[in-house]
Length: 200
Ligand SMILES: Nc1nc2c(c(=O)[nH]1)N[C@H]1C(S)=C(S)[C@@H](COP(=O)(O)O)O[C@H]1N2
Ligand SMILES: [Mo]
Image 1 (tube, rainbow, N blue to C red):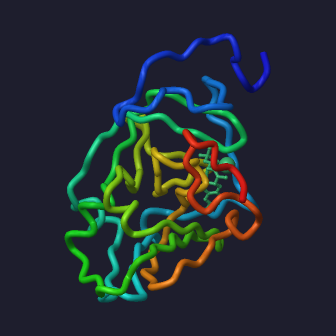
Image 2 (cartoon, protein in one colour):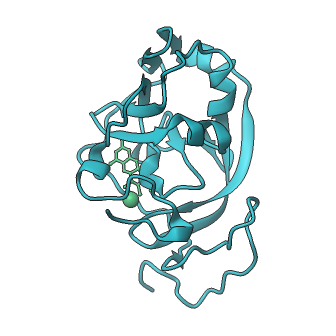
C-alpha cells in the first residue's frame, strides 16, 4: 500500500460545512512528517511563547500556557502534498482564547507565526480570529511527538497544514503582510484546501 489509501471513500461534510475530502486530496491513515530542515529538540522546560510587534509584548512559560483554557477539537488535517488525515482529536489552546489576553494595536492586520528553527508562516488576523486556529500539545490523548511539532504546534483546520507552525515559539503582529517560509517559496498565501489554493 502506498501513501494514499485511494480506495477509501470519504463522504459527508465536516463541522464547518465543507466536504470532508477537499478536491485533489486522498485519505491516508498514516501521519507523514513534513519538515524542512532538522527537528529541533525543545523540552517543555525550555519552551516559551512570546508575542511582539503591534501588541503589548508578553511571554508565557509552559506551565503558564497550560493554565490557559484548554479545548479539544476533532478535526481533519490537509497537507498540500495531497494527503488528508481524518478525525484526530486535537487538544490545546484556541488562538481566540489567547487573544482575549492580548492588547493588540488597532493597525495590526496580520499575524506571523515564528517557530524554533526559523520556520515562519503568515495569516490575516481576521482569519486567526474567526476560525478555529489552535495551539496543540496533545493529539488523541498523547503528547504531540517532536517530529510533529511537539511540544507545541499551531493547527489551522481550514487551511493547508503548512499554515500551522510546528515548534511554535512566538507570534508577531504586523500592519503589513509578510509571506512566510513556504509562501515565499511559491505556495499560496491563502491556502484554502476547498479552493485548491496550493500555489501562487
Ligand atoms: N516549524 C515547521 N512547521 C511546519 C513545517 C516545517 O517544516 N517546520 N512544515 C509545514 C508543512 S508543509 C506541513 S504539511 C505540516 C506537516 O505537519 P506534520 O509533519 O505533523 O505532518 O507542518 C507545517 N509546519
Ligand atoms: Mo505541507
